[in-house]
Image (cartoon, rainbow, N blue to C red; front, top):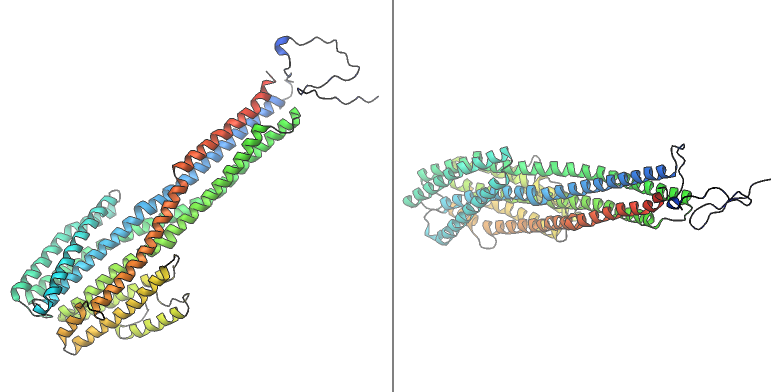
Length: 503
């Protein structure tokens, strides 16, 4: 007749079948309640439980290592961009700006000469020159500290350092010769003009290219770091998902094995470990996605605009100096005019435009852009910025840059027209004047608008880096370490009582 099914006791032992011989030798007291292990079965219960436990521990440690590696890499990448390479690139662009404005002020000093009508302007120009000279020195010191581990950057900084003293000496000599000659406005003494030519040639051929090399080198480092970090985050997200799911699958397999072999509905420590692992996986994926967002925000949205506007401002001060050079040095007026156009094109490039056609083409492009902000028909630094509007207040500031840039270009043509009409002193007055409607006043509006755009993006860059630091900092690491320790402890706690039954 068929055998009656066995029943399990409360302790998990199987009850004897009805009619079975119960007079078999009783187990010794020391072995009471312990399970017997069939040594002939390779995957008996204790071996299977130990193997699955080991798999769980390995999977959990792999998930923890992957999480630590991905998030630490993201933190280091954002830190490198936000705290080192991006500030270095901005400082290098600021050095270019300081050097350019130094030369613009030197040209203005030579331009206004000893004319008493410009006495107040002369003092203001001298003060600005000294301010920019000190600023260049500070920028150089910081650039030297920042490029300590970069041989090419160090060479570029040393080149600027070695030549800056020569440049300053030449400018000082040009001013002395000008003072001694008591030259009228717009007609510098030949010796002073020749000395200034040597100074400005030194600036253009050595100082500015070296400063630009530092800027470009740091910008290239930011681009490489960003590309590598985005790739690492994309791959890391999938590694986290794979190792996290493996850990969850191993915990689920162990839970099922204990349920089937020991006839228990659920193992509370393992259930808690599984839930905590699922929460850890979700948190790690959210942190990785958030790190990617912070990285894009910091680099693509903020830094790209910061560096474009920083370089635009530096170039703007350089073409402002070209305007004064044009008036100061008639023998080289054509070269200075071409240099002005080249730098104008660097800010807002319109292919094929000449100085005589540039303003009309810029006006058409600006009108099209104002009708539809998605339309940007010029390139250059300003084109880069107008295609990368992201933050509150940024568009308004960038539109002010475009308007001020247009007005400054109109002022430049007025200066050239006055000079060509033989009205040199009027051209000098209009060029150096700071009253509303004069060229330097309009240039100040352009500089202020550029500074406003720069400030908006710099704040956004700083905020993105700070948010990333907060999300991926010591607090996150401490919580992650505690979670890993807890899951490992719960896993061991869940299987240990069951394995003890087989001792």
